[in-house]
Length: 320
Figure 1: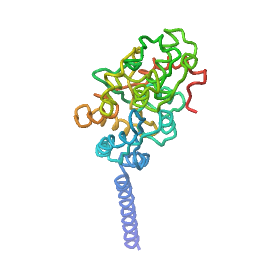
Figure 2: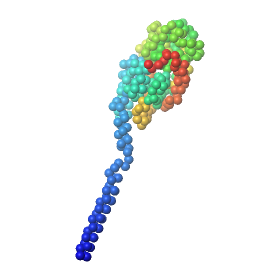
Figure 3: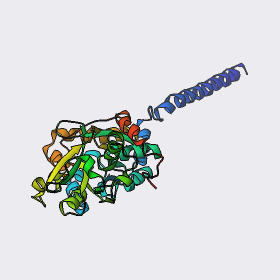
Figure 4: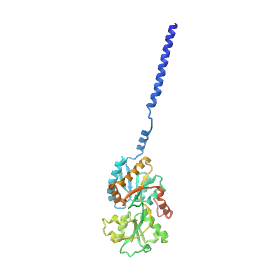
């Protein structure tokens, strides 16, 4: 009996040791079977946040079909750099581009300074990440252009004339010239100063209207005559620079902030790398006369915001 008890005791101990061994093994294996970090999960989530196609929005500074053809190689290169299909889309005007960005239909917008200010006032998902450089400067001026044989010699002589401008939300085409007329020349309302005001749809068209006698003066970026010289070689002689406005911060490359922050940084880096790529710089020059790309911040455009305050409540400028 005593011997049987001993055998039973040893058997129970053996069973207990096996159970403990099995328990210890499960505790050790379990952590190894789980991910030790969540980087893969985060990467998957970021990928899910990306659109199937990245849309770049442009406004017409020249013929829309010409811009579309010109930006195609830019879109192709960005697609290679970012690993996602990229398409350039030419909008009808600044307002259409701003609305498309605000409603997530455009992810990268080439937005002039004033259009950017309007975009940030109306939407919270638009942010300037870069700005253009033209001939070594990140600022520019608006230019008043008249025919050389017009007899117009000063801005005061423009009273009662026909004004052609690209769009009423164009920084150089409308906002800064209108503000200068009000501040420096005592003009209460620009629509009363001119006999007629024509939205031409682009800087090129505004100049061509003056060249062909359909308007007396146009306001554009400086010097937009070079953009039409190929088709109108007489432009440099028959159109003259009457005057200029104060400095304006250059156009933005703005991002839709509903994109992942890390992807926006990839976009910023890809564009900045174009400063060392002659092919891409040539494309930027052909589209908007850009000769380089620089960092930008929202605060760079506060001077435009302060100018906008002159028109904010008079109903002449809106995105509606």
